[in-house]
Length: 153
Image (cartoon, rainbow, N blue to C red; front, side):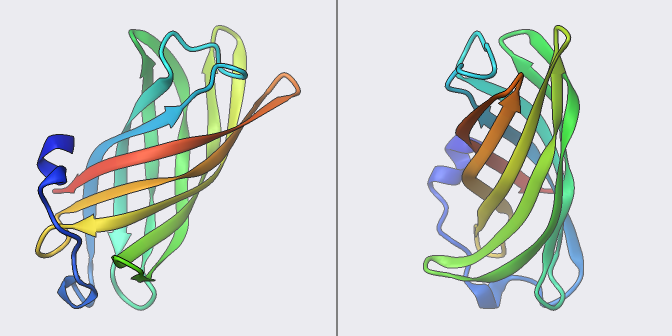
């Protein structure tokens, strides 16, 4: 999906549906600097299942779960909530809150932040995003990032 997205252009605001909703599925990555989450790699990859509403100011809600780090599974999930579609500098963008708790080996990792994405393709078939988040565990906090790649079903 990521390779396919690289050749697509940003969707124009006028080309998004004026109403209704669409389901986008794909993956999200929590980028780890290993200061709070002792990952084998630098990213935890999870499955994203999102619902984007196009009416009014829009919305993006859903979950990101089934996180994995090179075969090590993480429990818990992240909730994507609220959100709004607005005209960004390169086309329409959607921004939502993301929060939740991931667990592994008795440790809990609290995630909080936003995810901001843009639509790709002639009518918004793809959604890519990236933003800043914080991860907190055991009194330590790391300022890190989350990325998203999803396709409309």
